[in-house]
Every structure is written in C-alpha cells, then in structure tokens.
Image (cartoon, rainbow, N blue to C red; front, side):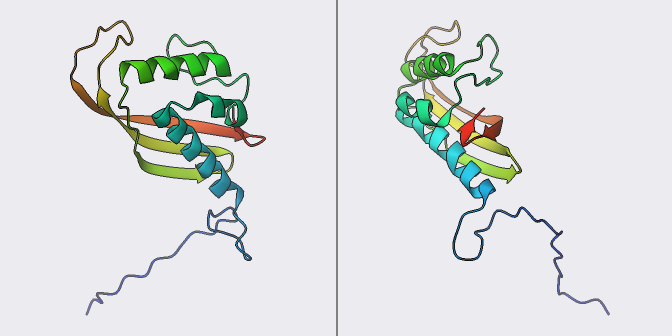
Length: 140
C-alpha cells in the first residue's frame, strides 16, 4: 500500500543562501540584495546609486549599448523617460556563486520615444530575464 507522505531530500550545498549561524548573511544573500537595489533604483529613477553598485566597465549586453556604467545610466534614464510609471516587480530570483538570475516584470505607460518607437500612450506588460555577475560587491 502506497503512502501519501512525501520525503524531500535536499542536495548538499555548501553555499546555501540562508543566513549563517549568528544571523550573518551569506554572500549569495548579499548578491541578491545588490540586484534588488539595482532593480529598485531603476524603478525610482535613482541612477546615482549606480556609482556604488555597478562597476565602471559593466557590460549589460543590451543590443546597441556599449559597456560602461555611464552608458547604462543613460539607457535606463531613457527608459524611465519613455515609461515614467515604470514598475519592475521581481518574480523569481536565484543565486549561486557570483551569479544572480532574476525574472522581473516590466510594466508602464509608453509616454515617450523609446527604441525608435514614438509614444503610444498604451500600457505595456512584459517580463525580462537577466543574469547578473557580482564582483567586489558590484554588478560587473
């Protein structure tokens, strides 16, 4: 006779993201927190914080965007201008080692020119997947 009980066996993982004894966060928790700060800064239009959390030679691999923190600031300033009510809710976030994968929403009203498209006044709603690499406490 089969049992209705389920046994879950967790694989061994020396870099789990739960706090260490004594309440100290593990590096992966810190990395996820850094990505959250980045996403929230984009939502608020607070690009000055990029100086602290994004490396100077950061490469986001966005089509047509040259590497560099200042280029990234300009890109997101343009996105915020085109979508002034931009929201980027975090749907899923996973960390391992120096990498953080994030699936976020992207919602807003198209009120300005963006990517060669004139404002439509329409609401957009999509998802974005990004894989971040963290080095020396910054997105690299």
